[in-house]
Amino acid sequence: MYNQSKGLTFFLLAAVGIASGLAAIGVWYEVFYVTADTGPETMKAISMNIGGAVATTLLTMGIMEVVMVLSRYIIEQYRKERDARMKAEGEVAGRARGMAEGRAKGVAEGRAEGREEMAQRWQDWNNRRLAAEDRGEPFDEPPPPAIIRED
Image (tube, helix red, strand yellow):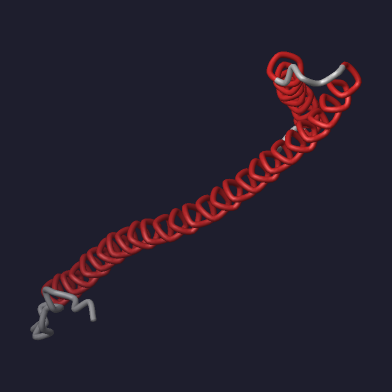
C-alpha cells in the first residue's frame, strides 16, 4: 500500500518548495516592482504576501494529496472487483471443463463395462451351447442381444 512516511516527506518538501517559490515571487514584486514603498512598508507587504503563498501552497498540496489517496482507493477497488470477477469466471470455466472431462471419462468407462458384460454374456451362452452339444441335447436358447441399449 501507500508508504505514509514517504508521502508526508514528499508533501512537506513540495509544500516548502512551492511556498518558497511563491514567496520569492512576492519578494521580487515588492522589492523591484513596487518601488514607492519605504523599507518597513516593503517588509510588511512581503510578510503579508508570504502568508497567502503558504496558505495557497498548503491548500493546493492538500487537495493533491486527497486526490492521490482517492485515486489509489478507486484503483484498488477496481482491481479487487476485477480479480474477484476473473476468479469467478475461472472457477466456472474450470468446473465446466472438469464436468466435461468427467462425463467423457464416465461414458468411456460405461462403454468398456458394457463391452465386457456383452462379451461375458456371449461367452456364457456359447459355453452352455457347447455343453448341450457335448451331451447331445438340442440347444434352442436364443443368443444374447447384439446391442445393449444405453438408456
